[in-house]
Length: 517
Image (cartoon, rainbow, N blue to C red; front, side, top):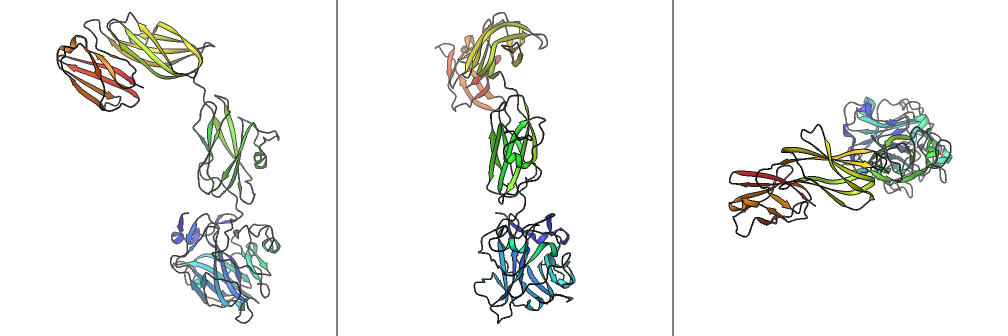
């Protein structure tokens, strides 16, 4: 867990995270029954309701009588002292009591305050706090009985011998629910309104807890952190639901049609919509750790459809959010064809157009179109599609009457219902004079042949570059009597993708596209 040092907190910023939640170490229980001879001991118990360990180095626990003008008792927390997240820390004072094991020893006496009133303050080092606390910054404070400097209104008077004043777990906590076997006994002591009368109850049997006692998560609502929940990796029939919360617990979700009435948090937990009808898609996410990302794949959705995603968080005590979160989500349309590549290769008297698909859905046919200016296109041929296929398919068509110079080709796909979609385009530069340099096979898995035609009579420099222009391979091709076809085997394996092969010789330079699969 993160270690949090509160030394930079301003006095005005210490206190509540929300109306009933503390964001700092707080005083959880005090007992002033000890007097050195009655087998009881004064103590001050501290509690950390936050989700992080907190460093209390140099903090002090101070005592002031009911009507005193300045604190008269103090004990300082040693450097390096941490209080665990949801853990306790016990300061033992005057008296002796079997079974009470203190984390820190102090000597001031609170027993005189049991019949009237008194104060305990938890402070951190500083110079801007109240004078009655030696100008230290007050982190938390309790005044009871006739105490004249409480938070809000003073807590009840200290109970009789053996009793204590204990902070509540929630607004409805009582002495009975906080006691042994009570419903709030394991829900921590995190209730904080900055009003001692509302925050503490009188206990007639104290229950001191120290750093070795079991941690107790407070009964705070589990809330989603900023920008959560959200959806990602949106596809045609699925998306990921991402959740992050400030405390551990559970999150429940339902996926409803766009515009559906908002369900309550309890309905979401039960997996229903606002009418109580079971949602087709619902789920539960275990939030094992606070402030941690949890991703759930949501499948079985309809392509190109909007949804309302409702999510509600619940803490480990079973208390669920009053207002659930809503996320608007929409799947994308399923592509009828997943195209891997579309290439144009200039041959001696024609242009070869080739493309490969990895998936086809309701695909009737492909149409290849050509243009001399990239504005006006005319079809030059069509190929029957693969209908519904999950296998890789390779298609080839030849332009046997290419126009002189640069020309533009594009690939159009037609569904069985007549819907058309442009998939890709490519450029080819056709020359009718001279012979063309060619490479094959193209696409290739690794090596390929290059046909240099009559260019093989002189030295030639060959370069292979990726689409960013980075050199991937180079070699010099010396004249050979073995013919114009050469095997090119790159020194390093080329990654899958598109490359350009440049051939440079005496008085000529040619560039061709190479596809590596």
